[in-house]
Image (cartoon, rainbow, N blue to C red):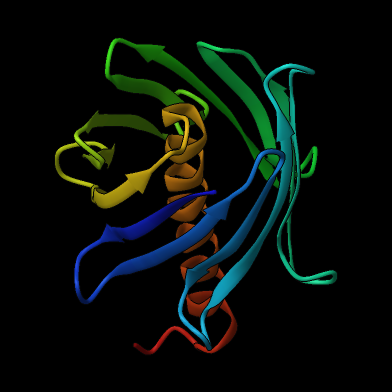
Length: 168
């Protein structure tokens, strides 16, 4: 069984990620106890799919996509309120994009000696990735980092829009 343990973002902003990756199942948590989401995904490179749910039965996002040995293409969320994720493996790095040209973020993660480091987003707006990755395909790990950042952005948007009258 493989695992991923790390952080997307810094100490004050961002989410931790803890995930166990079995032969066909990914379970764990992004974020903390109060603010975060459960990870419940299934995947198979042989059959070419990744699917499941991030979050709970009522509040969360579905994940549904295709997976090969060198690329991953998935939808996070629904047809209206969701983003496409496309990742590509090149040597020891994963590159790609979550979302569209205007609203979305780049994915750039390098894997070396059991560690992952990189950047989600741009130089000015985005978050760093720092994690240990043991016995997990880099495409799966990078997808989880991208999903973590995506869910962080969604939860921040929802938290800011639901409790304020504009006087902050």
